[in-house]
Length: 146
Image (spheres, rainbow, N blue to C red):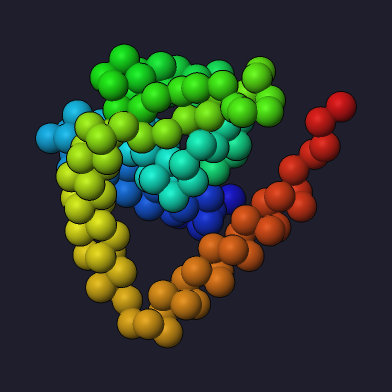
C-alpha cells in the first residue's frame, strides 16, 4: 500500500503541521506544546492530579512529571498534598501561570480559529465525527497489553 493511500500518513502530517505551528506561536510565551496543554487543563481542572492530567494531555505519567517540574521551576504552578490523600499532589496555576496561560492561549486560539475557518460548520462537524471514528477503530485494533 503506497504512503499516499495510508490514512495514517495524512493524519500524521496534519498532526505534525499543527504541532509545528503551535510550537512557533507558543515560543514567545516560553512554553512547549506539552506545557501549554498542561496549563490549559489545569486552568479547567484546578487541583487535578498529575496522573489525571497525563491522561487528559495524552502523555505518560513520567512525561507529565517532567512537564510539571519544569512549570514548577518557573513558578507557573504549585503542587500541594491533597487534603485527604496525602500521597496525591494537587496541582494549581499560580498568578504567573494564569498570565502565561492567557498569553499562550490567545496565540493557540488564533491557530485553532484559522484552522476552523477553512471549513463550514457542517464540514467541521463531519471532520470531528470522522476523526472520532478513526479513534474508535484504532482503539479496537490495538492489541491488549499482556
